[in-house]
Length: 86
Image (cartoon, rainbow, N blue to C red):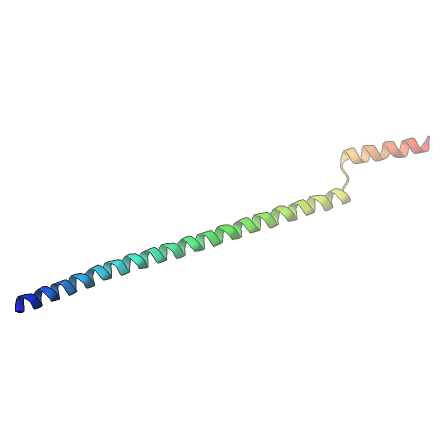
């Protein structure tokens, strides 16, 4: 009877050990998943920021071209003015 009790105690100890190892592995996987999620969120935010910056740059270029004509626009405008005078 004593041998059986010791064997059962050993099995219970082994089960607890295996359970603790599995619990630790699950905890490590959860931590890794959280880290990956945070990295993905940071990457998404960077992509959003880049897209917003590109849109703002395009809008500034558009507004700048409206207020500051290019050399070709000036030449074209002077040619039009010159032709109207004739």
